[in-house]
Image 1: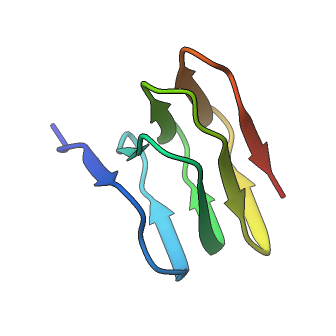
Image 2: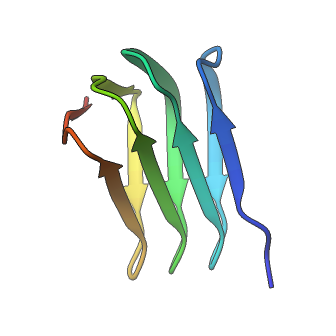
Length: 85
C-alpha cells in the first residue's frame, strides 16, 4: 500500500509533479492561495485532492495537466471555489 502525500499551506512553484498509479496527493490550505505546478501528471488510478475548510479560493496554475485513464482530481471543500488554469 502506498502512503498519501499532503502539501499543507502555501508552497513555492514546482516544475514537475508526478502522482504515480494508486498514489494520492492532497493540497490542503485555509486561505486564498495560488499553487503553481508547471507540469502535473496524474498516472492511472492516481488522485489529487484539493482540500480547504475555510472560505478560500484555490487556484492551480501551470502549463500541463495530464489526467490518465482512471485518475481523478477532486475538490474537497465546503465552499466549492477552485480555478484550474
